[in-house]
Image 1 (cartoon, helix red, strand yellow):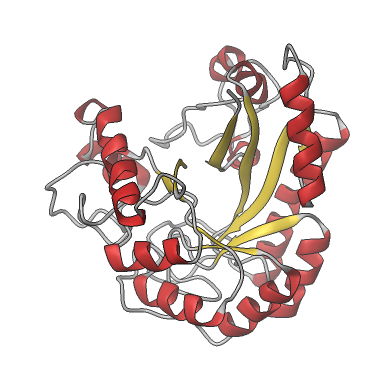
Image 2 (cartoon, rainbow, N blue to C red):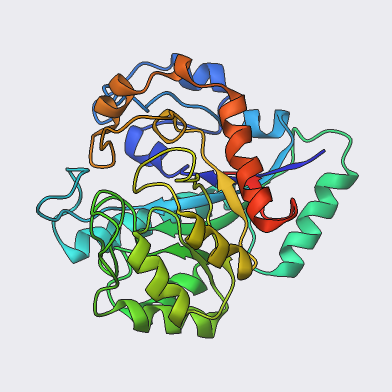
Length: 313
C-alpha cells in the first residue's frame, strides 16, 4: 500500500542545515553546526527521502514556511522585512527544485503529473531509485507580498496555501491570535486570485473567523492538512465541529496531527502561543498513543458519515 503524507515541512531542513537525501540514521548522527538550532524541542528529524521510499511514501505535501516578524507573534525570530520574507520563501522553493533536478523528487504540478507519478510507483517492485512526489504548499502566505504575486508562485509549482500559521500573517489570523480575528485587507483578493488559478485552500493553523470568512469567499477545493478536533481536545489550534462540518461539505480531507499538545485531553492550559520547547515540557510524548490519533480520525468520520474525509496529516 502506498502512502501520501499530508504534511511534511521539509523546508525546515534548510533552516536546520540538514541533508535529507541521506538515510535517517546519518541525518540524526551528523554533528550539529552553527545555525542548525539543536536546542529546539521539535528538532529531531523524523523522515528523510530514503526513509520515505523505504516506507512506501510515494508523495507528500511539502511546505514553504516563513513567518514574518510582527510584534507579539508567538514564534519569534522571523524575517523583519517583506523582501526577506520573499527571499527566504524563494530559497525554500529553490531547495525543492534542486531536489527535483537531482532526481530525488518530482514536483507534481498537474493531475496528469499525479496519475503518471502514482503509476510509476504502483508498477515498481522496489522504490529505492524513485523520486518522491512533492505537492508544494505554503503556510501563512507571508512570502506572497501582494495578492496578484501568487501567479508567480503558481508558475513555480505552488498549489496549496494556508492564510495563517503562528500569529498574524499578511492575510489573516493564525495560531496564537485567538478565534475571532478575521481576514486582513489583502485576504479576499488573494483568495480570488487563488480561485482563478484552481489552487487549494488549506484551513490549517487559521483562526475560526478567518476560516469562516475565507470559506464564504473562496469557491475552490479545501483541505485541512494537519488539524485535530476541538470537541476532543481544547485549544484554538483545533477545529470546532461547525468548521469541520463546513470544510467536509466542501469536500475537504482532514489530516490528523500527531503533535502531543494537540492530542492531550482535558488540559486547560493555553498552549497556542508557547514556544515548541515550552509546549513539549507541558505535553510529554509518553502521555499520548496512536489511540488518541485514531479518536480524532473517528470523530471526523462520524461528522462526515463516511471515511472519505479523514487522513493522516
